[in-house]
Length: 422
Image (tube, rainbow, N blue to C red):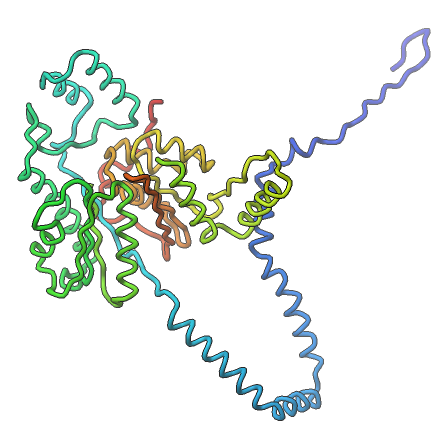
């Protein structure tokens, strides 16, 4: 600039280099690393195949003739190698586990007259005469913070004042749930009850004699040689255990259908479950990062936090047992999930409450009702139960999945998601 009576000065403003740590989104760096490691074998094979192609294109008829002579004079070696290859391939094909497919599933939706609003629940609690004002106020606070909505249900016996629980009422409730879900399942799949070869029934608290599985066999006139199992006392995680039992049975008794009927946290158990599941589902990039962090921590005794694998790279959808808002909050935090990943769990808790081992199936039904299940998507169902059990199931969609008819979300999916009061 120029100022009268003074020398002319020039001020140059230097441009600083950008702070790449602030300007570069590290999420995309991690995604690039994941892509590189996942496709490392392919990237290495491409130049190798190119070299083989170039060498083969330069061979003349004399070279091909010499190669044939070499194989001819080493015929025994060629036959032995071929026999070993064929034998190994046969053993692998015969012993590898057969694929087990989820044909369809159905969730029971109680009739609307069994739904209970907060005011109705509080009024019933007051009329029973069993609670003082402080207890009623505590119940009100729990309801407001529970994550439940105004359309959850309670059994018929709990609508009476005073409540009238009984063995007969429990059996009637079990029949409504089991037969209601199975009627929808058979109607949607067009599968005949006589085609069912395996039946697994799970209920933690109600275990009558004759068993629940016997009630289903008699109701639908299932075939006489059916393999039926009745599980009880395993808590909210038993749904995945029942699925695992059905999978093992289908490995032995093939070309048949299995029906699993489900009636309605411990950090150590979750850690063990994730440690076992991780190597089976996580991409190689995440496993290498976890292993490298573990080696550094062990060798140098470094005070560094263990690397938490990014399960979002392995799964597209998460079905977390809706045992309560605290369970969902903790898993969302510890697994570094986004709100959309736990949406199905929160909305299931809001609409249907804690449905025990079947909650993960209501969540899967929510995902399907939202038309989010695309071909190739992977789903992680994770459930917790009594005795500090934690079990997982992983599914992969073989096609785009449409909402099932008579879904429990059929009449209300357009209203969800709703905002949850924290």
